[in-house]
Length: 254
Image (cartoon, rainbow, N blue to C red; front, side, top):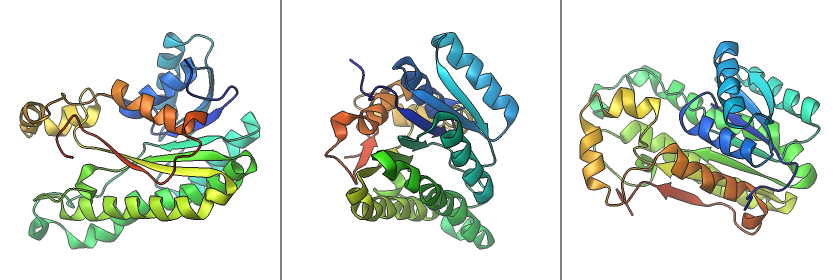
């Protein structure tokens, strides 16, 4: 049973791999028009090839652009609307960090705190600002990603947890503001997500992947577990739901 409304148009940022690619794939399989965003033209082209392999008749729009550049984000949103004629949902999976801002707080680089906040929270706020006029035409959905570090306190998470907590607060407040326009806003808050480049590069390399897997009573989620929730939130089945922070973590936290 399809979760998206017929004719839906979704913009998925960070759709060239991991969670974003899987969301784009499942949305395309339901018949949605999917705007595939990534930082570089070649990675977007490669992602579109993968999506076409899964759904040969997929309706896809290539929208490469630097997601840390507000002007580029404006251009991405404008291109989607120009080519598809509408915008029904924005799924923001492209989240950048900043060097030396993770780990023990006293060992991080305070000069990069502002850059971290801009790359994570500021860029998402700008994307919402650019997309809202188009979503408000017929109603729509914004779904972003944060991290359980913004919900559950833990050592070595002070900077990231603070910024992700800010995203969650922004999502809840914005959802109240734009509900009159029939626009819904949500945040998916995972912890470790298996079968993703980030997990493979960082969690496994630091030796935390096995520990997290052991602690997750339901097993660590993969992109295939997360994408259906995103599609549900973007569809008519969630028409009366907004402002939700949803942890998908296999039981690591509750």
